[in-house]
Image (tube, rainbow, N blue to C red; front, side, top):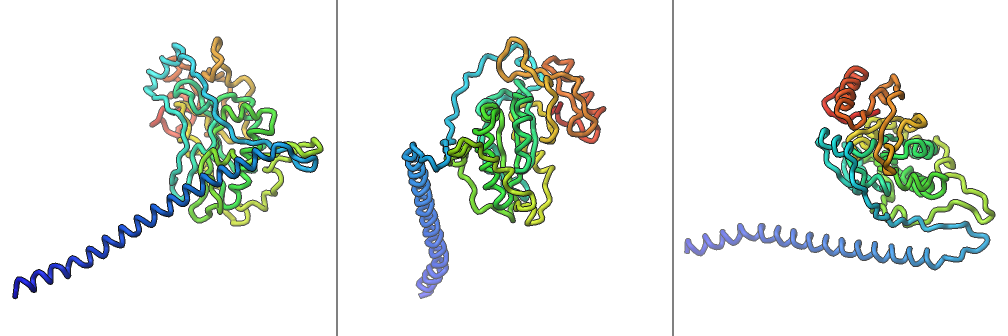
Length: 339
């Protein structure tokens, strides 16, 4: 009798465990079903949008001239590294890495790192060039064309996009990549990163780069006149940041742009400060992005007082010495030098 009561007590204790396991399995099954539905709906949605755009191949005279902004990244064949690039890589002990899209949590912000990649900058080697790192919001896009036209090398651009400012930012990205005289250079060199606070999430967040570039952009109207840039249509006072009375997290933007670069050397600069003409120029005999930098461009601020070396070892030590003397507040724990 005692044995029977003991068994009954044992089974009674197991019932809650079995119930919890059943509930857990049910929740897992339900989540898998929802994930499958979302995946199938996304595929159908992308297919239907693509069909809609392809069928609208003959716009009427009253409609605007639309272009499909989806870009298939061409495969750039990397040339063999020069002797000085190999020497610099061995001195720096850096490793080449390709840029890739990532969804990250950056403190109190959500980050879509490398949401839109530069076609050429994505494969630049760690010792092959210098990345211009900058930050801003959609109101700063009018400076991007001038920066890229003078730099002609990788640019890492971190953009603050709280709330509905993300929609304007995505329109601005599509516009500068397709509607400006320097659009090809922007496509080649600029990588865009967007970030927004946890408490000011946008209603719509793109899934990846393909979704951003899938939607059409408009450059000219039916009468041939140019469409005004989207970043000039909305007054600053009407932005989500202004209406929500948010402060601009400048240090967050700087760090995001800096950490996203795939080159060892960076040039951290405000986007409104344009590089001097001839500051960055290709090394003679090489048509690629490998870079030598003139050392005459010196600023007195923490943003521009650091010089980038050439690939010779004595220049590397000189860079570290200038870094310590010119901007002691920045410190020299890392060998990641700006110009």
